[in-house]
Length: 122
Length: 296
Image (tube, rainbow over all chains, first blue to last red; front, side, top):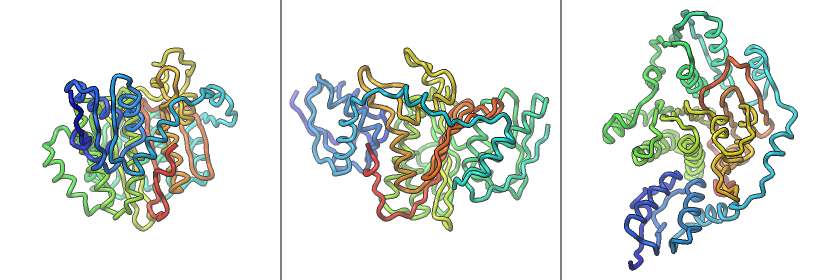
């Protein structure tokens, strides 16, 4: 099928917010049996990191889909670069969880509140 | 037992949480199957009081009822647990929210997390963001940050909580130039979410809280660790970018983060929430803030 320009905001709205929205958008494109698509971001107002991460994995990293993105704003471009650069982060997380030794445990609510009241946190 | 609630929460952010903890203590001192929380007329409460209380009550084994004539609690729809957007026609919902355009708060919104309500949820969240933004005439750079902070928290509820409902409630303080936003769910907690992972080694609420705040997602793709940036980036944006404060509660674990403080805490077992709560104090005057500078 010939590729056509798809205005993403016509499917999702001007704010691109959730992972679930990407999956729904993908289902719609797939139902139209398109494997080559040009997606237009011209009218996008905002995109969350979660949205762009899901979009990257479902559309851009998808070998079965040939996608071209057009009219990306500087913000959307920066968000896309951020998610691209963090796709393969080293897994050193378990060490970080166990390395903290200054956890605070309260045996009563009175004790917890006394601590919270004294904390300069506002 | 009848429990009188006299809370008058001041400007210190954690006072709301302290108030809820006091109530939980009193509820647990009662042997009755049912307790009635009687809110006095002259109380003043904040989002970090209201949503943790709602989530605690909904997860409590006891029957807990509210009694109040306080008009603020009435206006924020506290008694009914919040506005359920899917029960209203969209025009009726907009009309209802318009009534709050001259206020400094939004009502409690109790939104569905199901995929079939994606459009309704997006519309209501956009309406909430616009309402908050317009009420205090936020600059566009702060509005973008606010959207980011709300959307990442809501997306975590949808993706991880297994909760059928999510809650959002916000209050601005124009003379102080900050707003408090709280988002919550009554789902499986962070720990429950990690326990669903294959080869999970996280077995307590505190470890789950640390894992979430160190950016370890429960849904990473095989061979990659590309998720889990939402909370980390939100905190960076809020704390480093806007000098705000971040609070997270899940199970009996409590996490606090500000520019000068970072604490992981374990509350007594009686203070265990069946769900996850995120609260943020967001200072909203900052001409140089750009949310994209904090995305990693």
